[in-house]
Amino acid sequence: MKVTKVEPVTKTKYKVFLDDQFAFVLYKGELSRYGIRDGAELEEETRQKIWDEVIVKRARARAMHLLEDMDRTEAALREKLKQGLYPEAAIESAVQYVKSFHYIDDLRYAERFIESRKSVKSRKEIYALLRGKGVAIDKIETAFEECYQDDSEKAAIQQLIQKKRVNLSQPNPAEIQKLYGYLSRKGFRYEDIRQVIQNHNEKA
Image (cartoon, rainbow, N blue to C red; front, side):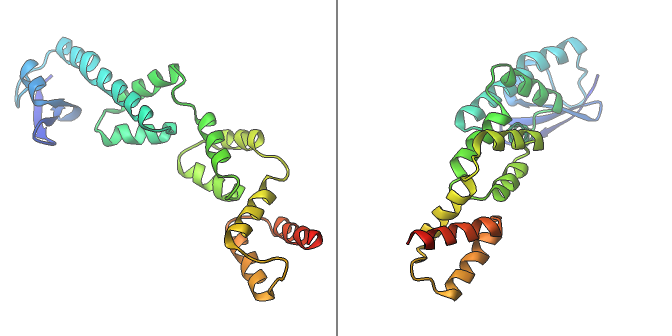
């Protein structure tokens, strides 16, 4: 196959195109090592060597580093690798590699995410955030089943009311109405909001 273009990405990194198709990114020293330049012929054996020993190896190391940095969903990891200009096949290899060590697990991610936010956010809000991070619906539902008790939503409502510093012992109708609106917009059910406010007044 023929090297049809070598395009600089930075001062040290270059996109390599083989037979007019983007193949991979190499550093300047690697271009010299493998004899890659515009118009050069690249043997399949050399291309495979670059793929196995440089590209896949680098994608796996990058994936590991990204997961050490912070917990990520599979979709987020794929996106970060894509931004790093790794080819799809190398990204797939890297994802399967970290999965084999259980370094990436969307269900575990969803459970941790829910546990850290359920005291201040509604299920609806958390669900939307997890979907936005690319977590599959079935994994979100399973995580909710694991993390939620019947009163979890009401506890979150209580927490937010305290945060808002609304005095429910001497309720101001306009303030209560605003509170209902605020909590409803955050995705809490009207009935749960009503019960929390009512229970507080009964205890008072």
